[in-house]
Length: 154
Image 1 (cartoon, rainbow, N blue to C red):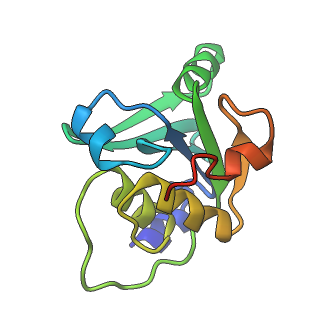
Image 2 (image 1 turned 60 degrees about the horizontal axis):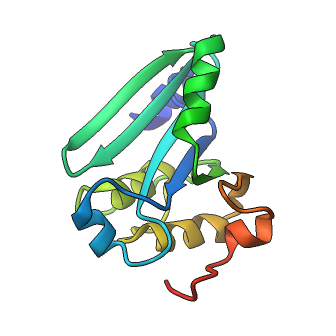
């Protein structure tokens, strides 16, 4: 079914995974003991001229559709503030009999066809190993800083 939707132009060809170093959830901050505390996805659907935002949190899942206009550009910039954003082409989905959990990390891993990860730092590394490109560095100055685990964790 996902392949039919993709062929019809309803699914982004590239997802932008936004990795945040901060989380409003105290539980998420404690459980995500690495550098990143949260991850969500932004995708461009060119055939529809809209941006999709997919976010999963402890409160539930959110899917938002934003038309492509000037105010959307500012909104997308605000969403990516103080974060590192990776651009990744989704891998072919493999049938898996068991999926772990439904919080931000496994949801985003499933979205882009990455091996299941439990923490944002692990998903970040999986994506970088599978040719994801850093498109915004957040508070970092270089791609090396954005792509390394400067705290030595993870």
